[in-house]
Amino acid sequence: MRGTILLVEDDNSIATVVTAALEDAGFSVITSDSIAGRDRHLSVQRFDAMLTDVVLTDGDGIESLGSVRTNQPDMPIIILSAQNTLDTAIRATDTGAFEYFPKPFDLDELVRAAEQATGARENVQGEVDEPGEGLPLVGRSQAMQGVFRMITRVLRNDLTVLILGESGTGKELVADAIHQLGHRKTGPFIAVNAAAIPGELIESELFGHEKGAFTGAVSQAIGKFEQANGGTLFLDEIGDMPADAQTRLLRALQSGRIRRVGGRQEISVDVRIVAATNRDLTPMIAAGTFREDLFYRLNVVPIQLPPLRDRIDDIGALSRHFLRLAADDGLPLRQLDDAAITMLERQPWRGNVRELQNTVYRLALMARDDVIDTETISSVLGEAISLSGSAEESGDFANALENWLVLNGSTNGRLYQQSLAAFEKPLFEHALRQTAGNQLRAAELLGINRNTLRKRLVELAIEPERFAAAR
View (tube, helix red, strand yellow):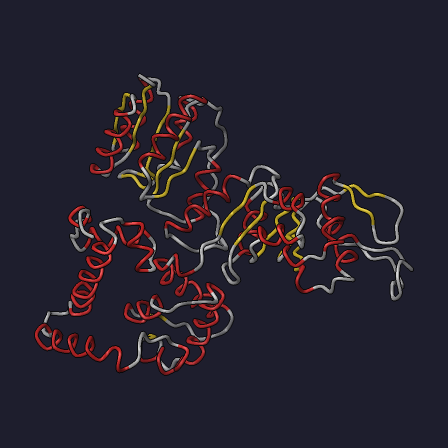
């Protein structure tokens, strides 16, 4: 036996699957479906690790961890949660949890974490904080859960973070979250956009300058490094930094000391560096336009932000969030109906979350009714809304759909759901047939997230194994 694990989970199906996986890996598993049952087990037996859900029948699995720490303070805790928000990830981390897994999770990863936890027996400490308010990041999709987990891992240290992602994916929001939720939150957060500063001025902007250092330097200026002392310096669009400034930046990162332009004295600075870029730095390194040693210095903890097209499940929550922000900014308070959200989910969003926010603000301003529907979206956005295919290309499909609607038009308030199911099922079956049942390749073919595909396959009762022999 590798050890004994206490599993606290009130969903019987999940408990059964997790128990089987852990037992197959050599663990002994004791289960409980409540906080009260958990505490009874802990009072009479020592465990090598505990896996616990957050929402239990008799309370919050995180808020109630105080008694667990009292009884078995050294026991590693792995938290499972269907409340897949950054808030939950932060709360889990603040308890000193060994690991946090959003649902649905990968069983193999969960088993590996249990093996590491029972082997490491790391001390865990920390009191449970109240859930934070006004957290800057929104998203429950699987794509964002990896981001949340990476954020939680850098909050209690000063490792340099490199945030990668397309324009509009929220890189500065992630940098701000790392600062505001981390141990430097009482210090300043200073942001610098390397792409927005002329090359000849960027060194002065970063390191400051002395009076008379160059034409126009009529007085001493304090640079961003000194302004960020004790806090976080966010270097946005680092890929656009000139070569000379890259060299001086590397020296500052290596030594923790800077020198103002025109100055002779070195100044010690205590800053946490978070950098970001929307560019692929690898070909830039090969071309000699970005220093390889600077890349390795910055790329200690990379966080890759997914584009909005890979987190379609978040568009509804993001849209509602932006409607609330728009109301806070003085615009009318609006709501989106389900069909309107579906329409937004089908857009390409090349500008990612930033484009979605601007679109939602425009809808809040221009809509005539409090509830925004598809007609409102079409009238307000006009040609900005993407419609797939020309009239000629979609004519056959439109005719077939019209015929289906004639036959199935009286479905007692379920026409929308039944229409989607009728369309999605043959579409997903076609994708699985084309990829011989490979769900990853099918999701890529469809242009959707793999977890979204898996969820819909279950809901539509499609068995991918049926297509495994197809070619």
